[in-house]
Image (tube, rainbow, N blue to C red; front, side):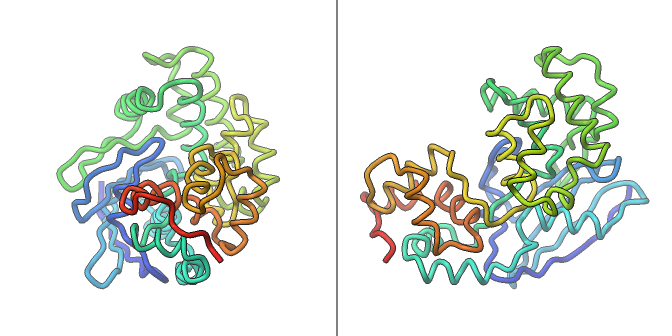
Amino acid sequence: MTSRTFTIEPLGPFSLAEAAGFGFGQRDARKPEGLMRLAFCLDGYEVGVEVRQDAGGVVHGVVHGPASVDTAAVRRQAARVLSLDHDGTEFTAIGERDPVIGRLQQIAPGLRPPLFYSPYEAAAWSVLSARRPARQMMAVRQRLSETHGTVFELAGERLAAFPTPEALLAVTEFPAIPTDKLERLHGVAEAALAGRLSAARLLGLGPEAAMTELQEIKGIGPFYSALIVIRGTGFADVLPVAEPKALELAARLYGLEEPVQPEALAQIAEPWRPLRTWAVVLIRAAGPRLLETEGEPVLAAS
């Protein structure tokens, strides 16, 4: 193992503490400690990354991996995972156009959508978690990663990267993963090895075509194809209209009858372009905090 470093200077507001405390899917929310630990697959091997943000807002990463590690590739993937591959100044402008979004930005300053490490890992999580309690399957994923992935010591804590596609294909049985799920995980691994789950490729297809193609993978239906595209690939302007929690919160925040219908959400979301995905994630993350603080919905956008 070797250690390399990289830096990312965010364009626009960014808070690593908000990202570290977000928690979703395969990742636990942790109390901000001034750093965020990442461990993920990259071109047939796994890397661990310690990420910190200095007082000036610059993000610094320490990469742990094999001597051949491609630090530039790790930096690109970490930037995508933290949504630092976009200019956040436009999101500030959206908050100025829409006072509801502006208030939410005050509640969660610098929050950008944290993503799955890759479409491959988002697809694997989709198969694992389908029709199972998320917390239970997070534990299964962790055990699978510790057994068949690489375990890193990151700032005093152990964190295991999910198995590479090659390693996942070699798993013939595993406790709490039934045979049919394991076969579907193998299908995900095969798709990744064939290049079908490349983030760059899916981004090039566009969100609708990417969702359609992802559904060719056994076990990936419309809901999970949207999850992979929106939260695993990095599209920033896809409007999720099938998330009940987001629709409920939008109704309360904008003073509408519940539940808000997708057509109404699309109309509300017009001022959020070109970062509608970011706005919905902000509503999901900061909406409950704002409603709890104010005790009633904030005023609708003009």
